Image (cartoon, rainbow, N blue to C red; front, side):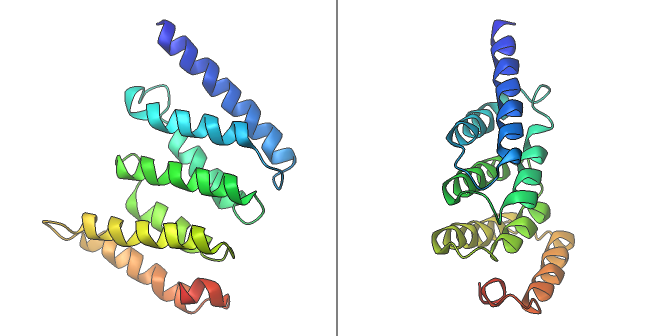
Length: 155
């Protein structure tokens, strides 16, 4: 029970860090990055207490990825990758988010995201193909190719 209390305290710190971040999203937020990484690591151990955490992290990137500090954006992206690799986030939703994040002009981030997408799709289709997810990703990729943002379409 003591560990759960400590976890809930960290979750409240995370909530406070998000409030501070949303008031000024372009500023560096090292505490938010550290809390996010910690919570990403322990999410499999506390699925009940942290059931909403992965979706909140994705939502944070969906809304603020274009304006947030590059270091924070990379840290949160790595946390989402970790949660996806542990099957705590859906393949289609994460890869759609990452394709949308190709609009950022951060070359290292785009390389990280592209590498993850390729590996994720390869792992998803090992043994048995997931046709529904493949179809959803293909449709999304075709939309991205028609995107007016050259960086997103090239990646």
